[in-house]
Amino acid sequence: MRYEAFQGRRVQVIEIDDVSGEHVIEFVDPAIEANGAVLAIYSSGEGWPDARVSINPKVESVSAEFVEWALQIARRQM
Image 1 (tube, one colour):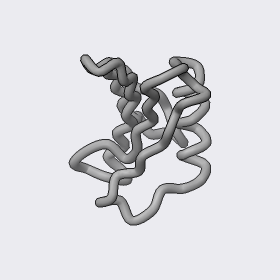
Image 2 (cartoon, helix red, strand yellow):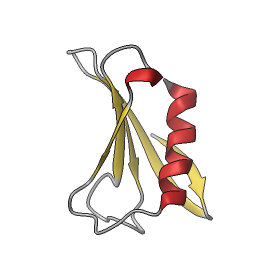
Image 3 (spheres, helix red, strand yellow):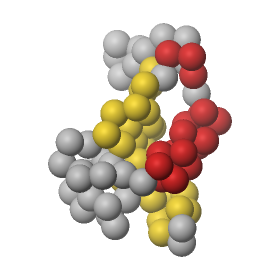
Image 4 (cartoon, one colour):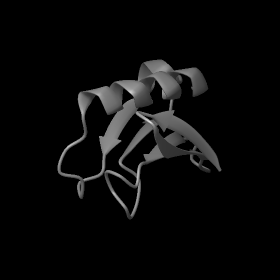
Protein backbone atom coordinates (compact mmCIF):
# COMPACT_ATOMS: atom_id res chain seq x y z
CA MET A 1 0.00 0.00 0.00
CA ARG A 2 1.29 3.42 -0.93
CA TYR A 3 0.13 6.87 0.12
CA GLU A 4 0.67 10.31 -1.36
CA ALA A 5 -0.12 13.65 0.29
CA PHE A 6 -2.78 15.94 -1.19
CA GLN A 7 -3.53 19.16 0.73
CA GLY A 8 -2.35 17.56 3.96
CA ARG A 9 -4.47 14.41 3.48
CA ARG A 10 -3.18 10.87 2.97
CA VAL A 11 -4.52 9.51 -0.30
CA GLN A 12 -4.05 5.83 -1.01
CA VAL A 13 -2.61 5.05 -4.45
CA ILE A 14 -3.28 1.53 -5.71
CA GLU A 15 -1.64 0.18 -8.87
CA ILE A 16 -3.11 -2.82 -10.65
CA ASP A 17 -1.91 -4.69 -13.72
CA ASP A 18 -4.68 -7.02 -14.82
CA VAL A 19 -4.41 -10.10 -17.03
CA SER A 20 -5.77 -8.26 -20.08
CA GLY A 21 -2.75 -5.93 -20.02
CA GLU A 22 -4.58 -2.96 -18.57
CA HIS A 23 -2.61 -0.82 -16.09
CA VAL A 24 -4.83 0.93 -13.52
CA ILE A 25 -3.93 3.49 -10.86
CA GLU A 26 -6.69 4.17 -8.33
CA PHE A 27 -6.79 7.10 -5.91
CA VAL A 28 -8.69 6.54 -2.66
CA ASP A 29 -9.34 9.69 -0.61
CA PRO A 30 -11.60 9.00 2.39
CA ALA A 31 -12.31 12.75 2.67
CA ILE A 32 -14.11 12.57 -0.70
CA GLU A 33 -15.44 8.99 -0.85
CA ALA A 34 -15.23 6.74 2.20
CA ASN A 35 -16.01 3.46 0.42
CA GLY A 36 -13.73 3.36 -2.57
CA ALA A 37 -11.68 5.01 -5.23
CA VAL A 38 -12.41 8.61 -6.13
CA LEU A 39 -10.94 8.18 -9.58
CA ALA A 40 -8.90 5.78 -11.63
CA ILE A 41 -6.46 6.42 -14.43
CA TYR A 42 -6.00 3.49 -16.76
CA SER A 43 -4.26 2.50 -19.96
CA SER A 44 -4.43 -0.67 -22.00
CA GLY A 45 -2.12 0.34 -24.78
CA GLU A 46 0.91 2.55 -25.19
CA GLY A 47 1.03 3.96 -21.67
CA TRP A 48 0.39 7.67 -21.19
CA PRO A 49 -0.82 8.45 -24.76
CA ASP A 50 -3.68 5.93 -24.26
CA ALA A 51 -4.46 6.88 -20.64
CA ARG A 52 -8.05 7.61 -19.65
CA VAL A 53 -9.65 8.93 -16.46
CA SER A 54 -12.65 7.33 -14.80
CA ILE A 55 -14.43 9.11 -11.93
CA ASN A 56 -16.44 7.13 -9.42
CA PRO A 57 -20.15 7.72 -10.24
CA LYS A 58 -20.94 7.76 -6.49
CA VAL A 59 -18.84 10.90 -6.08
CA GLU A 60 -20.77 14.12 -6.61
CA SER A 61 -17.72 16.04 -7.82
CA VAL A 62 -13.94 16.03 -7.79
CA SER A 63 -11.94 19.23 -7.78
CA ALA A 64 -9.88 20.03 -10.83
CA GLU A 65 -6.91 20.45 -8.51
CA PHE A 66 -7.30 16.84 -7.26
CA VAL A 67 -7.58 15.54 -10.82
CA GLU A 68 -4.51 17.51 -11.89
CA TRP A 69 -2.55 16.18 -8.89
CA ALA A 70 -3.60 12.59 -9.63
CA LEU A 71 -2.65 12.97 -13.29
CA GLN A 72 0.85 14.12 -12.33
CA ILE A 73 1.34 11.03 -10.17
CA ALA A 74 -0.11 8.68 -12.79
CA ARG A 75 2.06 10.15 -15.55
CA ARG A 76 5.18 9.31 -13.55
CA GLN A 77 3.97 5.73 -13.05
CA MET A 78 2.92 4.96 -16.64
